[in-house]
Structures are given as C-alpha cells and as structure tokens.
Length: 234
Image 1 (cartoon, helix red, strand yellow):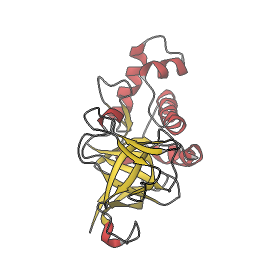
Image 2 (cartoon, rainbow, N blue to C red):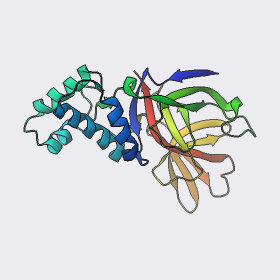
Image 3 (cartoon, one colour):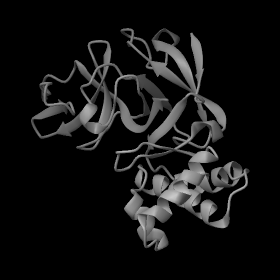
Image 4 (cartoon, rainbow, N blue to C red):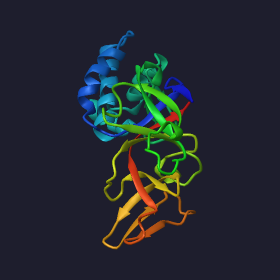
C-alpha cells in the first residue's frame, strides 16, 4: 500500500463546505512570496471565488470584480501569479485557472478505494489501494475517500481518466449529484437521479447507457458518497 503526495497534482475542483473560514488561514499561509498589493488581491479573489462556487472564475468575471477595463490587465496579473508559482493557467479553457498544489500544506491522508471486498467495511484495508496526501484545509473534516478515474464515462463533467475524485462518505444524495456507487463490488462514478419508482445513474458521456434500478431492485446498488473535489495529475 503506497502513499502519494499531492505535490504532483493540481486542485481542479472542490465543493464549498465552510471553506471560506478555512481559506482565511490558508490564504495567509501561502502569501509568503513577494506580491504586489493588487496581485495579493487577485490571488485572494481566486481563492474566495473557488470556495464560494466550487470552480475558478473566468477572465471576464475577474475583470468585472476589479473593474478592469481591459482583459490585458487581468492577464498581466495572472501571468505574474503564474510566474511566481501560485497558479496554473490553461489557455483555451473558459475557467482555466487552477491553484498550484506545491503551495498547499499536506497534512491529511485520503484513502484511494478500488474494488470493495464483499462484506468488508468501505475503508477496510483490503479496499484501500494507497493514500493521497492533501492539504489539511481542503475537503472538510468529515470522512472521505478518493476514486482513481478509469475510462471516459464522465468526460462531459470534465472528469478525465487518471483524475482522482474526492468523495464525502454518505448514503444519501440529491438529484444531479455526482456519486460514487457500489455495484457488484465495483465503484462507479455517475450522476444520481431518483424518482418514486426508480434510481437512475447517468454517465456524462452519451456513449454510455444509463443504469436504471427499479424500486424493488436496489439491493445490488449502494451509494457510497457524493463528489466534493477533483485532483488532476500535472
């Protein structure tokens, strides 16, 4: 069983779980390098926006917040933050700004769960492939685990093969949530939808047929938790 530090990964997405308070401390800790007043303001905005919405702002949203008249002004400050190592910029993407993981403070181990051995608790050692080291301020204090994504069934939700999806352990989900579900000892990621008569698990790729479980046929299905974050290898 191995241990994988967060350093080679980027934090792509995390859900707001009271993270504004945690980021107040986080933002003070990462602002150690020399930043201009405006650069610090931009970085704090990126952190707060992520905490509030669960995804990064667009360039235009950045301009609107600061009253920049030109996109070039926003690009100038973003390039400065990138040069100093605080962010990564992915050209061509509408929300292509991610916080650089080398400035996160590893302090928590999240287990990566693969197959689930029949009759074993979710986080039994037999089910854990290795651990991810993540910043202690991310993903809340509740129990969670990670799933290593294989395949392209959730590509429409920007979840790619090789990503690590962080799951908050719970047995209930709301319609539209991305859940980790256990089906015949295998963990799968799908959109969750429930009606009075059935539960439907849908991929984010039209090439895959939805999985439908009728009301009396849910014994083979178990909801393990809801997606709260995504880590992507650089």
